[in-house]
Length: 108
Length: 307
Image (cartoon, rainbow over all chains, first blue to last red):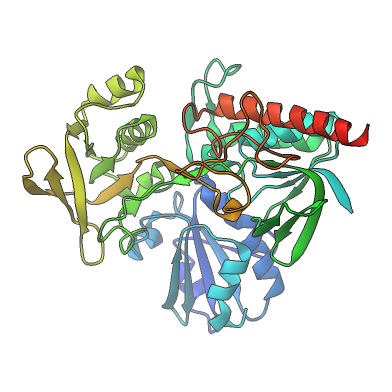
């Protein structure tokens, strides 16, 4: 895992997204090519916005409960949470620029 | 600085061009694009690439090609090209505000999956509508799925999806598949796969997630509904040439036109290979071959310029 992102699991998910700080959760898996494309952009965005945005990665293979609970049916799916509530959902790979503009409301 | 060779795209064509250009000391730069590795990144087993007798995973094959290109000194930029100007020398290629200049350019931007363009499809993308079985099949364990298409990729998706789904129905608008015989037979004979022939999908139904498809038989005109939890679209590809419109000569379908027997495009010094040119063969190995040709064509062309 990258140095700027945190790893979320079924057991610590509620705690991670319960934060006051907006938290983007990237739902991914090893066998998903487009998910791998997001590694670089997410790592950079996490590094450039430490303090205002937390980026967490959740492996859907190892943590199927959260993915099911939030009805994730396609990966990569990125959901931004704040205080435990879903604020924004992005489905599918995109460029860093596009991601930044879509996350602008969270001060990226 | 002006690069000798700039390669756009990083599928088998782009990476093979990079390997050859790097080994010819042309110090290529490759703008590999966000979809690094191209369409093979979305596949599983590649069983027909020569040299791998037991098959190889698509992403693994692309990683290996990538390492080979980098080993010989290819410089890689992981961004999408946003604009090109081939009317000036050196050629100009932009990634956002960053300008790259090059004496020659190899275009290998490939093709992207096509969508059906029917009501409900876009709204439910990510909620049961998908174009990537390897990415999304996992979420449909013991569910009913439909696959739209009749080519090799539709067969491959349908067969792959049987690992998860309870039932896969292939919906095809004609009465036979254009897939290779071996792939078509594997699909048709599969106990979990059904085929609905001569039928098009008119609409994807469902409020929040896919619940059914509205179908129409093209021979009888009869309409029906098929209850499914997901629809995987595999109806072919369109070339990624939007940034070359009005700049390079393209055919009616948008593929780049090359001169007979070479990879030369309508602009001297710009070469093209792979699925962005080829709507006939569209194989990893043919794309790699064309990438090799493009690198050799570029090298000879550069030699001529400096002679």
